[in-house]
Amino acid sequence: MGFSTIAIHAGNDPDSATGAVSVPIYQTSTYAQDGLGEHKGFEYARTQNPTRSALEANIAALEGAKFGYAFASGMAAIDAALKLVVAGDHVLLGDNTYGGTFRLFDKVLKHYGIEFDLVDTTDISSVEQAFKENTKMVFVETPTNPVMSVTDLKAVSELAHARGAKVVCDNTFMSPYLQRPIDFGVDIVVHSTTKYLNGHSDSVGGFVALSDEKDAEHIQFIQNSVGAILSPFDSFLVLRGTKTLAVRMEAHDKNGREVANFLTEHPKIQKVYYPGLVSHPQHELAKRQQTGFGGMVSFETGSLENAKAVLENVRLCTLAESLGGVETLISHPASMTHASVPIEKRESLGITDGLVRISVGIEDVEDIIADLDQALS
Ligand SMILES: *Cc1c(COP(=O)(O)O)cnc(C)c1O
Image (tube, rainbow, N blue to C red; front, side, top):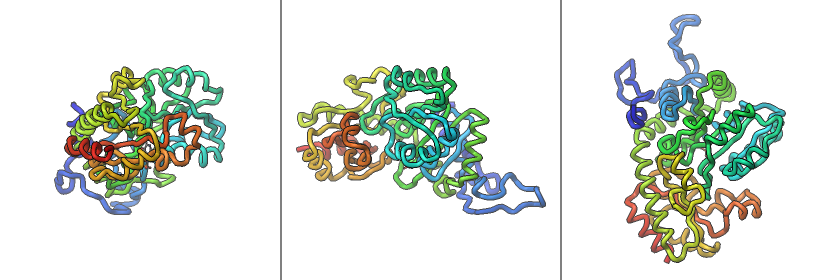
């Protein structure tokens, strides 16, 4: 079956009680039992909820995974995936992951005995050299935020598996429509559903998708034991969002390419970061590994002053953190999403004071370009 058919039908069976075509919001905390130990598979809503189960079946199918678990946020999902390692284990973490992921390692997991090292995962030989005796996991994000570096998922997976380590990929920027990490050997896919999967900037959530039965049992155990579950209402919203994922991602991708081309030709812009441009260092890899380039574009304006002028003069684009919604959002990584990254590290990654990031929405692209054009002038 094709992607859109799966998106619309997986997990979305008509409600058995009423025939409702849309999965109802089962807003309940508990379920009546027929007798002692006799129930319909639902006992308590932290453990099981039909709306959440529908979403879990849906996104697992979209990622080509056997199992899926929905969490209260992307960070809760990432934290659950990291409970597959224990004190004394070492994790290789991409050196340019989402700031919250770095913070989780650096300020939380470290205190529980999880060791980690940062590594440039776009360079396979660096990954190879960084392996230690106790490396049990490699955590990658591709493309990265905001400079859009691309990691070779197949190469990293082969390397890690040969050394007995699992690979986790944060697939938030691409969504399963543009990239399916499990097809390249990745073991566990994590998402912030807050972004493209929900797609409408009106819900915070996260997801873990995987196929290994034993690891899946553990993630489910963690989901129930720790309790950071996605609510029935948010499950409903994300399930509604994924039905249109294919058409939205097509539109984000088309607009993203056009905005990237416009910016490339603009005399006031020094550099554009977008994997769809031939000038991007991993353009060929992105073409092989992704089925599109998506809607995330960053560009260098040269100075904080210039960046500020663009950010404060846009009218249609909204100055805000987050990404992946239908509306175009524009942000300043150095002072917003990456403010906690030390300045030397930030500069070495290309996150300068003049860098501006756009999450290109699905408005008419001429209007987005006209807005950027007037703000730039
Ligand atoms: C937003 C984001 C997260 C965190 O997700 P929340 O839903 O905000 O907790 C993780 N990874 C990436 C790539 C993100 O963009």
